[in-house]
Length: 106
Image 1 (cartoon, helix red, strand yellow):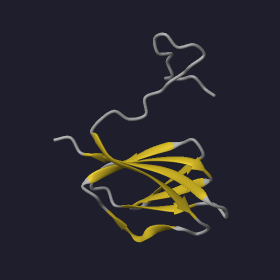
Image 2 (tube, rainbow, N blue to C red):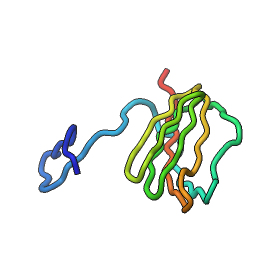
Image 3 (spheres, rainbow, N blue to C red):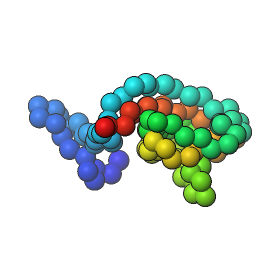
């Protein structure tokens, strides 16, 4: 594992941490299991909250208008509130993701 931007908290041994996201209030955390060709919604949509996605198994494709982001196992990506998006399995096997909804500060 590359240690760039990782740190060892006080009183920890052989322990590296990296802050992934630190703005806003978490309102919901869920796990999603996307089967082959699974995902959605079929058209891009928006939310008043942001989504922080973490892939734990497989590979996900996040469509953001004309852009596409591929997330592999142990990678994460934040979709800010108001950004049109949809999320799809990018493999021929199940993809598992954790989704964290983050309310916009304001």
